[in-house]
Length: 357
Ligand code: DOR
Ligand code: ZN
Image 1: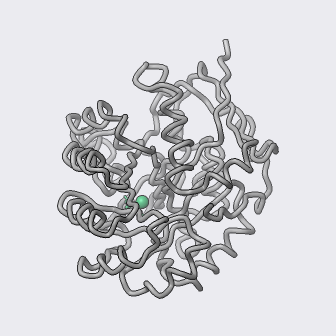
Image 2: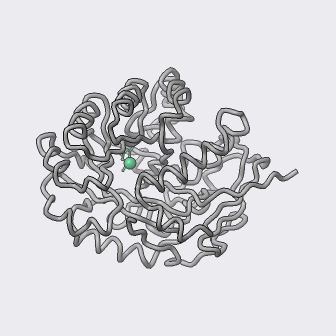
């Protein structure tokens, strides 16, 4: 018995498509194919390319490359190491948010602490600052946002203590939102031994206790973001493996499986993967114009996640072997069928570049 359901086109506000610079890991075509296969019609790409996107010129170049390759809709976040505030005005019309790395991760693209305040002062108060901030850097960021009244989004929260800090800030009335990744919801530090370098990412996998706290307090979490961070198998198996795991194709099946286990509702998925990301990142107008974007899923279909079926160029998933219940059947963007029965139907360049509202 099939059990079909139609969801609005999902939005992933946090992916790393690696193009330009590291297209051996992923590129705009393969990354957006992975998005469609996973039920995402809109994704927002991060700026930590090999040469980070910290100037208007690099942003324009990236957008130009994307235009010819994307099969779903794509928006961009800008980056900063604290020395490019003069560029903010020009890029404001083109980017969705500003991403700052306050804690160490892939690429070592970390903004010196002393330069963060200036960025908070200059970046538009109407647009989001996305933060990779853990522990004490989270505290630091929250205090700055309090002082300068910025709109901040804390990416990929993973621990009970970080979520507690965010809940407190929300209760104090700060303009703060947060996201959680599927790997922090469905894997723990107990999986690290089995996965080896394929289970290494930032923030790292946490304890069952931390994970249980995230599930229990899901109502305080605003979005699910995959943090799709592909690296080749060779890179992962090297002496110095980079951090990150791909996620675009597995997020929705994992969430639907949680629905079948009654740990989540369909309304939660719509809130976390559609309504809230559109609202938080200011892409409502674009979204309304594109109300014909939708995803058809079969809630009853069970299958096993297998590397060989993935569209991501890196060809692996930390969830390989997972049995899931809930399959993406078809995807439509602006009324056009772009994915069906495991096949991409859209031509490279079909996707649109998203401008902020
Ligand atoms: O694990 C991660 N990988 N975390 C990040 O914050 C960055 C990402 C990447 O770009 O590979
Ligand atoms: Zn990331």
